[in-house]
Amino acid sequence: MSEGQQAKTIPRLCLLVFEQYTLGKRPGYDAFLETLRDLGHVDGRSIIIDYLSAEERNERFPTVAAECLRRKADVIATTTTPAALAAKKLLARSRSS
Image 1 (cartoon, helix red, strand yellow):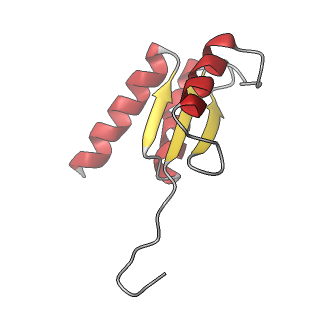
Image 2: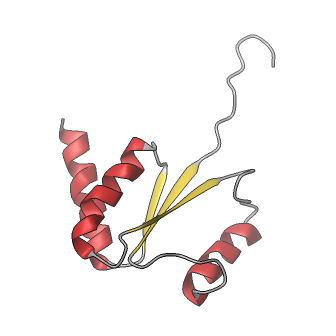
Image 3: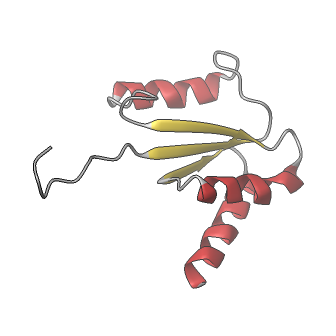
């Protein structure tokens, strides 16, 4: 890398799910991930995907969303309204501080 060039960072996607995610067991998630692959995003190469589960407890979403911020996620994708609301609230709070 020449002087002045910056290292290219790989974007991080946090996928917040209600139940434990298992590859090949959730058609909706797998279709989402397949679409990412079709767009050229390969987990571990051109994107990092963190699968974070609330372990079937909606009250865990604020904690799980906070983990996304700690990991410096570029994108947070959710599968439920409680997950989306928790992420939205946390992001709003982090931007105002």
